[in-house]
Length: 492
Image (cartoon, rainbow, N blue to C red; front, side, top):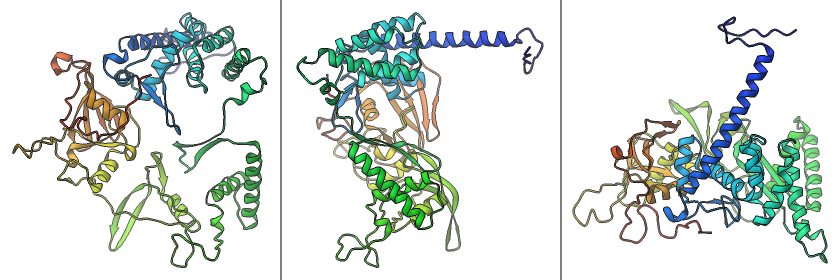
């Protein structure tokens, strides 16, 4: 017999036996699944209220490494106004991208995978499991037609609640291939259905940097290339061992792959007549990588003393000073030292264009896009005038309401920059690097370098906001703070 002792309050009426705990855990799981199913339904209904014509273009996903965009749900699902997803995301405490996925999965299930949708709401299939199927059918290449999605739905719905996630993933992939073969030309080679999509890719997961200073790489390459790469990595690992390396085999193979990326110049082999940038002894640098790392430093006489830990801007991760020293001291590395920028200083420019020193200061201060829940690195963001720059102020003898000064600038990713300019979202600076946002429906958020804090929600009448209101455009024909030529999502 197993006895379970409750914590504080043991012996009270709510103390559970082992059987009672299991029943409660199962009940909590069922309630969680029911709540997730309801959230999918509400997300779809939120999308119904916001067709693209209501505010702006249809929401899409930018595809990493590609020059096109994808809709948030597949063929046959309704389009959704691109700006409505941001407010849903902030209310749920998730990013705009995560909100796009939630809405997209809900529409994909309701319109293209109706059997799975019904099973989710009947409690037979967990919402997370159905969403994994929807994610696959939305982003399959080539694009799945509505009929193809229906075929996958029929195959998967029969067993989705009775098999594990890995089996479900394999079943979805197999169903897609079976449909391709079923509709293919009977006289064609069946293998053509498998070869119609080129699976080759190399993906560097630069948004997932480990605290050990490592990064994951995923690739799908030609068979011959894979075998050649494996031989080269194995040879490099053996060479490192012969040169005295005491690292493990896995670590030496990883290091050998990095050496290949530098075309073996790590061995300091120097061919006569080499051209290009050279060091003082005539040898070209083996490594020339830009790493933005920030450390607290103190001055002791003429010596600068750095703290042992800092923050690596590439990947937004903790980094050790000794790691940076090892990277810079490994082989022939070119190191560039930039001047220290005082983040507390107030810098001012004389034009609407943001000078490089001010831009760098804002990037270092904000770290990421300052929209609630957004984590896009500031270095890839636009620098926005919180109070827009007035092109006519000087000519009309008025003070500039939106000066190019540190306190009136913020880092915004392209999407949230456009959101601020074209929708009812508004924000203001309450202190350097601290911003307060107001949504079209009256929700308020404070954003600083530590993250997002939800503030009390006020009524629209109190805020004077109107849902779907647009900011006035400048006389130059493009919105304030967004230069001409910025690409807009295509309406699909």
